[in-house]
Image: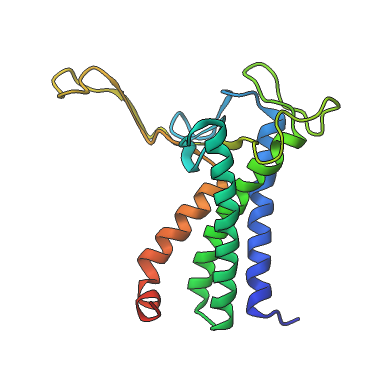
Length: 205
């Protein structure tokens, strides 16, 4: 069965979104906040946290900031979908389409959390695991859900020597941010486009 380029891209996006959501639902319904599982020593952990903000746990201005951020994400997703549709009509190279698709997957994956997770899950706490479709309702209204993060790579975890200016004697961790599969898709997509697809965009600017 021959699939058009558009259908292949749609299948890729759908498959990656399913992976993202399966990972998040497993984490959300099996781990308490702050719980961690060592995958490869101390430098790769599954560490469950939630955030109200942007990728890699960054925050954005409380209740109103959350509403603005969720709304902007929806607008951004609409723009990316429209742009991807234009690229398909122009028969853009597969590499360009895949890169944009990865960014789109990341944006949709995290907005799903923000829009729906507060409605379909009970709150995760440091002692209790969340329940899906709880009898008492979810922990927040639409658009105010928290994004689930879990991948933690503290490749370096040490105390800076006392002779180091400013940071001497303080704990230093690299890489500190905790992120999810959707964040990874955005990062990989952006870097792939910058490193390998610049020529296409320079020609079609």
